Every structure is written in C-alpha cells, then in structure tokens.
Image (tube, rainbow, N blue to C red; front, side):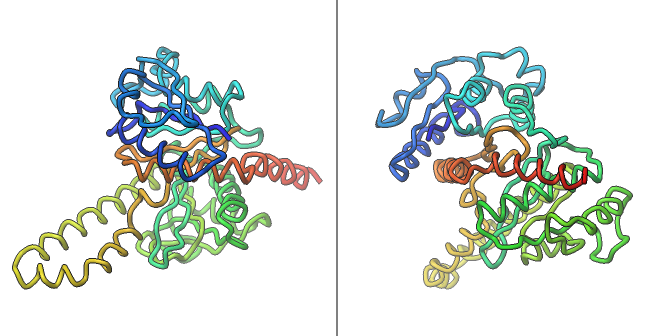
Length: 334
C-alpha cells in the first residue's frame, strides 16, 4: 500500500509531517509513503529511507491562496502533485494538512467525484464521552447544501461507519435547533422528510448541538456552514476548558499537589477530546481516499491521519460506496 502526503501543508510542516510518516512506517510493515515537497527541507529531518521516498517540488499552496485559482496555477505545488500520485495510480490514497478549500478543489479537479454523488463532504470523526466518537459531515467543503445532498452525506457516512468503523446499524441524526420533527429552517425540514423515508440507513431524527458529545448518533449530517461552526466551537471549547483547568490547578501549592495525584485521570480525559487521536477529516465522495489532516497537526495527528487513510484503502471504502450508490440507483429505477 502506498500513500502520498503533502509534506509542505500545515502549520508545522514539514517537520511534524515527516515525523508522523516515520511513526507510521514503523507501525505498518505493508506501508510505503511518498513525501511530496522541498527535498532540501525534508531530508535533514528524515532519519530513515525505509519505505519513505521524496517527490521534490519547491512550489506550495499557502493558507492565504484562493483555493481554485491556486490549484489551477500552481500545478507543481506539493498538494497538486500529491493528488496526481493518486490520479496516476502510483498511490492508493493522499493526505494534506494544508489549505482545506484547495484540497477540496484538488480532489475534484484531479481525482474526481464518485458517479452519483453530487458533492463530496468533509467528514471528521469527533469525540464522545463514551470514547466511541461520531462522524460529522459536512464541516466546510460546501457552505450551502440541498436536502438531497444531506441524504447523500448520510448514506456515505453510514457505509463508512459500518464497513470501516465496525458499527452495526449506525444511527444517523440530523443536526438541528430542536429534537422535535418540524424544527429548523427549510433545509432542515426538507432534509428530515427525505432522511425519515430512506431505507438505506437508520435515521434517528434531529440531534441538538448540545447533545453531540453524549453520542446520540454515530453519524450527524448538516450543511458545511453549520458543521464548520460546530467543529470549531467544540475544538475551541475543549482548548479553553483545559487551559482554565490548568490555570486553577497551578494556582497554589495545594492544588498542584492535587493535580499531581489526578494527572493520569486528566490525561485520560484529554485523550478523549484530543482531535489528534481521531485522525483527519475524510473527503467522502471522491474516487480515491483523500484525508484532510488538521492544520495544526503534530506528528501524532499526522500518524492517525495515515492510519485512517490506510484503513479506508484496506477496507476498499471507495469501491464499497460506489457499489452501494449503483445499487441504490438501480432500486430507485425499479
């Protein structure tokens, strides 16, 4: 199995990207990685050449670049060349921690959509209190959505949750301002009716944002604007909460002693809420596995994104979705 990684994307590239890749090849003996980026920056960090190669380019897409324009103009950028490795069949999946919009555009222009899927969705797995997590989509690949798009999101994420995450009969929920049917804006109301009548997945109704971390559903669907707000709110709240707890625990000798005793418990809670433990956000709906790692990914987060991409390839995720879409289309025609 070969995975291409944009070594120049993200806040801590290329150092943390390279370190994450090295962790992954030590963990998975069947894995080969190609790091796409500036060889002069990558080589001094790389401690092993075992199953890790470098595809050199000095051009990269930055967070300030306009996504579509950058993808069209910077054809030798590390992100575009990473996707081309998949397009040309030299890699099975690709990963980037770079510009989200540019990765979306790169995926559409260079890898393409699965036939029958109108819009791909950015789909991270977020933590829940029981440690099982849930898939939230879309979180920003499409700011506007139609009701039928949310149905497609639900279908793809349900297949992913069952086939890759191993959840029998995944529960699908619709993000909304209330749990009762009939709540929300027109998009939510129309999506609810379509989801409720669907036979391809187990729809459990509306899910309120305040309940998300309690795990009321294995899959939660929404438009990209709402999903992005939820994602960043959860991340920001977790960071602020731990910062406040740390400040209080370091405020006196007595609290410092208490913190020392409870340190293992605090670490366990932090792991539950740490995005780096859950990998990246898969771009469901493309013709090959594409994973968007967090922009501030450290080596552990990048390793988990690689693990996620490898899992998707190993379980033939794209092929399964393609087959399910075809089967669903045939049933609708009957």
